Length: 372
Image 1 (cartoon, helix red, strand yellow):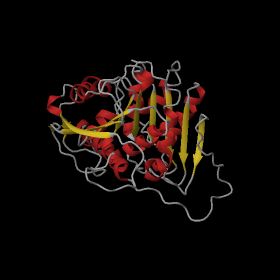
Image 2 (cartoon, helix red, strand yellow):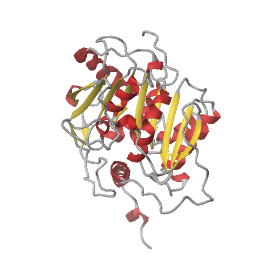
Image 3 (cartoon, helix red, strand yellow):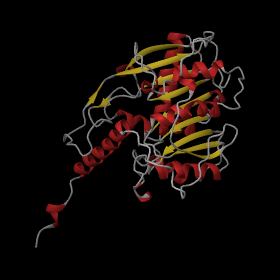
Image 4 (cartoon, helix red, strand yellow):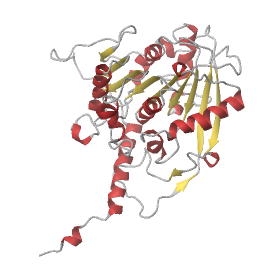
């Protein structure tokens, strides 16, 4: 009779497999192509479409053909804000001084992992700050923190216009008085496995990094003063960055009241004592079991988002997670909008180009400066 000892799984192997699975998920998030529009008309049995409306909260359902909003087009008669760029040397950070080597969003799922202690590296973090036209230096301003910010700004000298670039959109929305004159802090995560550490972990570590290291540096170096009024503070993210955005506001409602999320990773990736099931706990326990907080939340998910065919028990289905988010937000009486996009994929560029300007307008609705 064979000994059971030879079949015992080494703890290190379990850890390495978990890292590989997480890396695979991040690889999907970084490179999943947009879903194509199905041929022919929508089936008669499909749920009715519900176009997004600015003056209505609740659930909305949209479908192709998706059309870019004209707010992304640069217009010659619209005052242009300026974008400043700088880097943060991680070695100067007390909160995120290094990043793990490998295991990033681009790592292959199930790829070989190196045994032994994890290796770490210092890195240069990219930051861009959009400052609207007419901003008076050192005047307290409403603002939005944008996770994965490098995705939403053009490379210097680039002429590409078919992406959801935030600066020209803000120029137009501010000029048309659809949103207040806001500053946007567009910040990139660290390399390798760092994004999941920063974004998917439900803790106040990332918020503390923004509040104590990023914003003070911008104020010191570029004379941008940030309002302390939580009504004038918003967070934005896609995928794991959306989980970070909600974590910032949920754990610190005295700092942030407005949240905007595309294909939010409200699933179980990074587990800890605070969140045994990771960001899945937002809709499973945190929101249902807590008093309503003063938050205004816009969320989105696509029909073919990550894990769309996975069972709920695995806590890795983005579609189920975001539908459950909408349910609990409605039950608790939150001001929210939930947009479901048919025939679309994870953080689908076509959907962003159609919906983002109105999402910004809705999430800033009701803001009145109080001078803080």
